[in-house]
Image 1 (cartoon, rainbow, N blue to C red):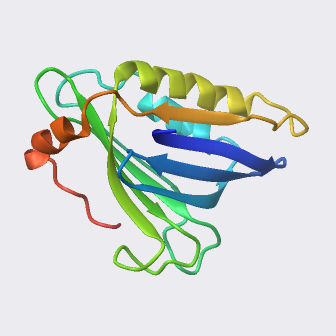
Image 2 (image 1 turned 90 degrees about the vertical axis):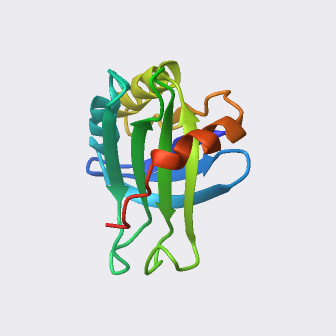
Image 3 (image 1 turned 90 degrees about the horizontal axis):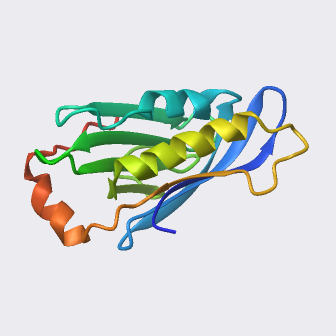
Length: 166
């Protein structure tokens, strides 16, 4: 799978444990994180309708980015990179116990995305919240990578700066 995948490992009334995997074909990473019951649907709400115009930007951070907190974390920064509306997500993934961005167990990569794949992800993320505690089999939300050649994305990223760790 190329893109970003949130898979439910278990959940209860308050917490959902996710396995989050990201890949752009060249790089990949995975972490496990604990989120509140409605965090993924809040993410869906933030991403709904992206990109609305060429200046549209959306940022989402989920999980833990402090080494003293349990579980990993993900930060996704969505940007349009040209006047046509091509978009990319800068994804930073942190594993449990990692102390910072230059430490082992971190991944930072670009994932090209399209409006249609974001719409599908939004729908899947919202459907996870509607599931019962006993119905977690195949509970996944996938943000599939666009079919653009990755070399095209690299050429377009000259003006796209990497945000700081925090």
